[in-house]
Amino acid sequence: MTESSPSSPGAVTAAADDDDRLPPPGSTFGAQTWREVAHLLANLPMALAGFVYVTTWVLTGSALSVTVIGLPLLAAGMAGARLLGRWERARARALLRVRIEEPSPLRHRAEGGFFPWLWTSLRDPVGWRAALYSFMRLPWGVVTFAVTLVSLFVLWPVLPWIARGLTNADRAMVRGLLSPSDELERRIEELESDRGIVVDTAAADLRRIERDLHDGAQARLVALAMDLGLAKEKLLEDPEAAARMVDEAHGEVKIALQELRDLARGIHPAILTDRGLGPALSALAARCTVPVTVTAELPTRPAPAIEGIAYFTVSELLQNISKHSGARSASLELWRSEHRLLLQIRDDGRGGARLDGGSGLAGLAERLGAVDGLFVLDSPEGGPTSVTAELPWRDRTDA
Image 1: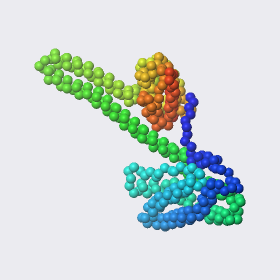
Image 2: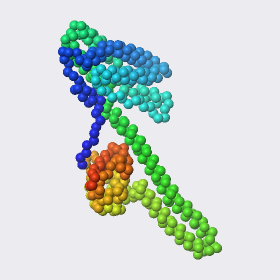
Image 3: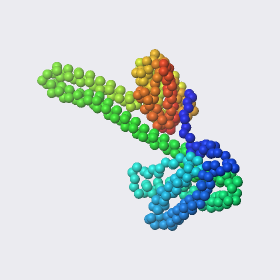
Image 4: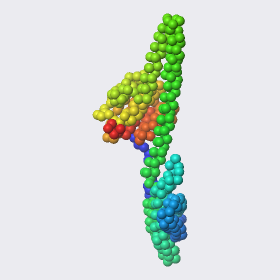
């Protein structure tokens, strides 16, 4: 299987691209040169303000850490350190044309409380990096201010090259200390989104099971209890009627048991637990209204959770083929490739399936994405349709 997924450019990559687009310094003073000069001259007051804030905050908080107000003071000061970092990022974006993304806001634990807030604030990496940046900038701010001021009056013919060299060092500092960890930030955002999808999916499944129990087996068992009560009352007065009612109740018991089996199969089928993914998918394919050829090549069984996700993914895809594709035949392939479990379903139907087409494919893609899976749909108008799904492989002994 071959697929391509666009990756969002990171802050560091984007910043490097911005540097590539900067006009080269020349003998004429362009707009970018004046922006760089302004940035260098502003380094001293910004560095002085940041140094005074950080040293006062850290020294005071550390000295008072033996009292009850020291650690809370350090934690509260993180907000100011984050604000300094935000100002510096904005200055770099405006004057140095460095695109630095804002880090994620500090997230405290949902249950709240003083000590969770204190612990989360004290170990905020964004705040500490901003504090380190502000602390180490004072000597650099003095140097850049002095060199730029002298160059404006004495070395002005080479000022554009001097300004570019000094601001390149500034760009490196901003990227190194003030840019978020792009991969980590992206991963945090994905995990938060996936957690919401998993919670919503679990809630929807629980509501479906509750509805099926309430409308199906539960209602039938309530009616069965009433019929048996009536039969008990008629047992002495009209034995034949009571016998008929017991026979009807026996039929209702069989139907209720079948409904419970179907419901249990929808939660976790017994064949999947007993025989594994290959036979379970073959059983699914046998119930499909379209003939399906199954090829399963798995030397070992994956973890039960992975088996369950793969099973219900195929179940929904085969239901879509039965209801919407108009296909005459379909194929299902299942195999393992290193640390991934892959399955591919093809049909010769009319095609035109889309993730936003209301067929439930979008929800399926979200569910797979929530467990680090992939969902690739190729369905041109007129067909054929191919769906490829990937899941992370976990050995059964790791479950």
